[in-house]
Image 1: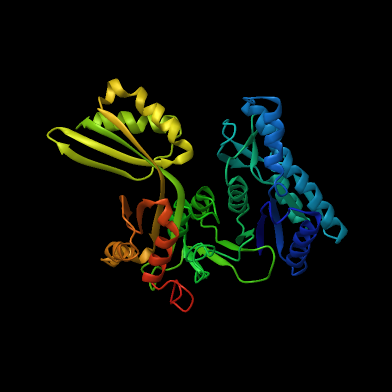
Image 2: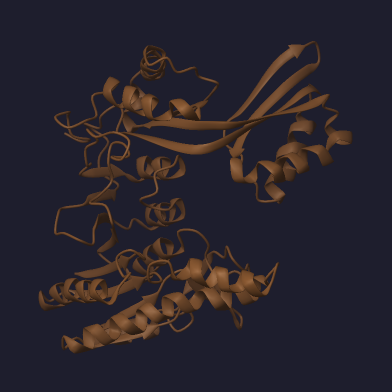
Length: 408
């Protein structure tokens, strides 16, 4: 079989940990499997490179930032290749461009357009291990980076291009849990997840996998395995299993530092809504929960949430649209969070939202906004109540240790 293994910054944070990664790769190769490896920069290397840039420039060129940040992964690839050589394993390091990763010409958040696999396949055919720099590619003659979660995305894209049997994502946790185990002590590791469930969890605050990586895996049918770099425990498999036997709620996700913006007294018109959310999209502001309420004849209030880090930018955009949208005032609220439940079984089981609301009511948590889809329900609440809310909802659906498994 062909495995693509991705190791994050914590997994390669020291030379000792790089040796442990080399040992794991060697075991796979000695069993007769082919293996390609994708790595992140060591530990906090990327943060240190950003600090160096900021010490020299208040607004560093995005092109040069990509050229700078791409060096972090290149260090890891060379060191891991050296460690594999010491174990008698043929290995070669590859930058993004050497691996044939072609991206769109967008610095800092490029998307992969194609991977030219000739060099990677040539090494694999000789029994060697390509060690590939994650998070980066090339557009024309310029180095590009893929943004947050870029190494996960690189690994899945490489797995798709090589038609790999598995793409294993190694992290500092042993898999995907029913809730953040730091918040809920009874949280249970899931053995399997559907792509759509993992995608919702990733979008709703679970930080184990990046949504772009899950989207790519689903599109190409790549089976993902999330597992720990530090032990041999079985991980969580993400794939396209049968939905028969899927439990109603699979997990609880949460997101801190959410802010709400309300445009008050806006004329009721689809054009105004298009103007607002079109402008926010053009400025790459990610809008989440949207609620419109009719308050007077011909007038509506429109509320939506954004990450607190984007609040100032979003407010400036809304203010600049005042002559177009003709809203009477703008209201903002900080200190919010979002709690969500996800499960493929929700599609055919009514009453899930009511059960979630009842659990929050018993915990004394007020619901400020609600958003739903076929397989998720999200509630915006005050951030101070987040931990209590997660525990209450987790317990209400019996997701903890001793509960039924995600799939029967």
